[in-house]
Image 1 (cartoon, rainbow, N blue to C red):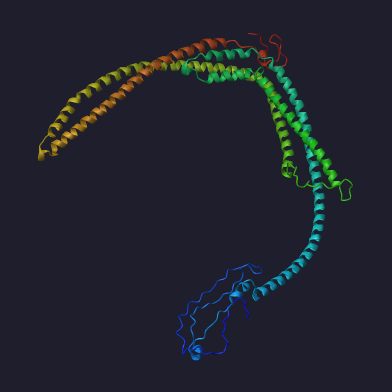
Image 2: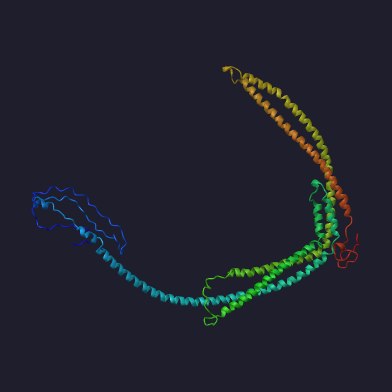
Length: 507
């Protein structure tokens, strides 16, 4: 008997014997067939419980058969598998598993041969491609190194040209700086008058301490008078700072020029290397260490920024040099013009202050008159509010008395409506009058404050007139001579460098 993983139906082939019974007893009801479901396992792998036979077991009660006819009608089936062989049968493979394993090995061997053939062909093509790629990479590297040497040569020439121009500009800027420093020592006296006027005008009081046109002109005059002592020194300091910036730009250009010279030597050496050169060697891991700090765009931008920075420094130097030359040429004319403008501003300001003072005096008289009128209005409003209290009391008393009417007599008749309206109107009238009284009282306080402010402003204007008209203008009647203003020569020495102005004696 052979088991292939599926249950088989056994038949009994023995001789028919009489069982001593005429007929078999009726068989019991056939039980429901139960299947043993097998779990799914991967093919080609053997597991301990990888196969179990699925047996269809039917349970029946065996009784003695009375005769052969009854035995033929209901044959009895002995157990399909012997209990002693059950454990051995569970550990065997089936025919399907054997065939599947063979097919798996055959397909695996075929796939390995196909893979080995493809790999051999791919390896041959790969070697040819890589050889060609290596030659192309070497040619590309040679061309790139040549282009790199050309770029370095271009930027070296640009840096050298800009460095030469920057050095020339530094010499010119140093010359104008010395001129400004010498001229700054010549101006001392003209500044004192303008500063004294500013100090005196700081004694103005209140709102008159204003940044008016006079103060603007005085400040401008101070700035112009400091062209030799302050403005020129400041310009000289700016030029000194600019010269330091120029030196920084010069050092950056020189450093960049030297770096490019070194890089040009290195790249030229690399350009001339071949596969048969003696100095080539293995440097393992050099391709894994990225020591670069720039890319071609940033490399070119660095030199371009250095050149642009140098150009900006030269432009600033030219602008400062022209500013210094222009300042030395126009100093005399500007100072005289500013002195005249300041005097005109003083006269105009004095006239304005006197006009405002007269207007304030007129306004003060009107304010005093309005103050008396406001006091009278407050008195009348208080009397009017006091007169409305009795009518309000009477109307509220009537309403309170009518609230005591009995039962149905507590009616909202015309008299009740009129009384309610009368109370509301009188109350609104009193509130309006009280509001107007508060507004009038506030106005009175405002008028009092206005009167006080006007009196204060009059005192301020009198103080301002004293400072501007008497003290400042009295001091500005004398002004230093032209040589002292322009600083061309000593005040007592005839000035030959400025033919446009006559030489004046010291004041």
